[in-house]
Image (cartoon, rainbow over all chains, first blue to last red; front, top):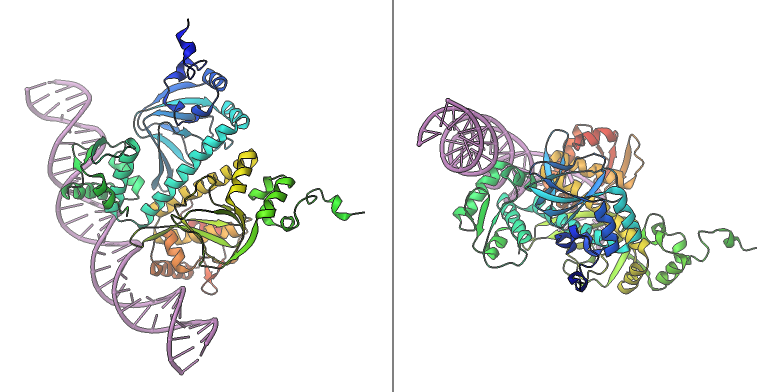
Length: 241
Length: 241
DNA sequence: CGGGGCATTGATCCGCCTCAAGTGTAGTGG
DNA sequence: CCACTACACTTGAGGCGGATCAATGCCCCG
């Protein structure tokens, strides 16, 4: 007897998709096995190294992707070079906007990243056919909208100190949603990127990090590695209450 | 002969809906006449005066609404009272988020407003039945997401001068999408609201308005009434290129 | 006339930016 | 093994933009 037959989840699911994280919480999770088979025929996994663009601002979009690993930053740039990161995306987020063919922002790998790339027409057909898929994308859009609005409060009304604490808190909660008392983690962004995310300069970010360290809110193991002994304390430093 | 019969648009459409703006571009436009009939049975028009809440932050939401007239501001508040407006909504926008029962923000009438109020369960049933409706709401969410991200760039990277110009430009383009060379219009927000939208203080907003006036970018007819002689000039002052 | 909202204007202060120098740390080649 | 460079980050000194505090002007309404 074929062992595979017993696994109702995996039966008929393409081999490349079987262990894929995107099927749990990601868009692929709402597709039927047949749809998955079809999609997988035309999709390719790709590694994108830190600093490389996935989609450029104002470019024509020829494909969509799903993040499997790593962090993607979405940013906007003004004509004179001023830049603002307007969102971060983690696995298993979907990148791209069906039926819009031009991107209004740049998507760039913040860390080394792995994505699953889909051709535009296939996704668009699946969206038209399956209301599940649109529902899933709608939900992601609403989640991103909430995050964007939270961040508007941070950008508009918080001090530099609170901004940096808010960033550290945001990363901590995204990397490990089950919040223990303390945790250690690696920042997916450079100081320059953090500055662009917070609407600050590199120097101010650096100064506030040292201040948080001296105050005992965080420990800085090395440039990228941070320990938070007390998440609630960090949350308070971020102005969350 | 019955004249009404000839109007294919209006046949079978409830009387209250016939002249309603929300059927052109709003969510009601994607409903079938039968659905409209059913929805209209349970919906009520309501006037909300400037300063009154439609939905409070953290409140349970018992209904959804559609803006028929006026401007609604969406805002977030920190525990210590600092406030940030995170979005403005105009007719015929839809207010509320199906299947979420708690609001993370406050919706308050910025001007005197007229809305059409729907009971929660009816909307949720219609959303489940009609993929058109979800598609429409999805599109609105994406539009709001774009606007939120544009505004993040404004909040994070623009000077006070550019922020105020950006605000004036945003209002101008929303009130009258066909952009002529010049236009005169009434600001839907008080100075205090503008400050909360821009992450500034009232005083700074006021100072920058006078500066724009002295530079000839705008004329201030009275507190709320503004004339923009050259929209492109305002756009440049807003840092849009 | 007087009072109460709003908005403007002025004077001063402080937080963050700017510019500039210094400190790791990793990679490269002698 | 140790210069040498490259790059990211930190630290310092000074200036400026926007906040703060306070006074004044402008309407609308009683």
